[in-house]
Image 1 (cartoon, rainbow, N blue to C red):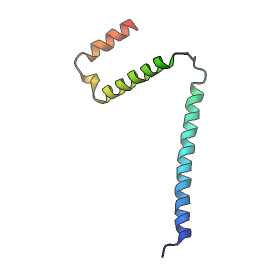
Image 2 (image 1 turned 45 degrees about the horizontal axis):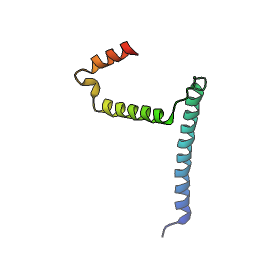
Image 3 (image 1 turned 90 degrees about the horizontal axis):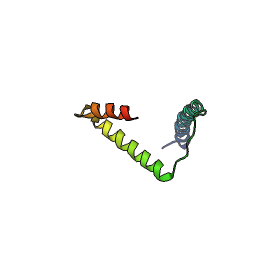
Length: 84
């Protein structure tokens, strides 16, 4: 027969470890925000913001697929830096 008290105790320890994990991540997020709390803010339209997010996500996918090894990548980066 299953001891319900034991099951509850096991669940509690899982919950406590999950809670520790979450609290640790919250502390890391707070530290991250503190590091950037003095950053200058800008205001852009939601449409521009969504375009930037989409472009960034595309870049992340391309980099994950090795775009930095593709022919012409170094030339494109150099041209971008010249015009930035």
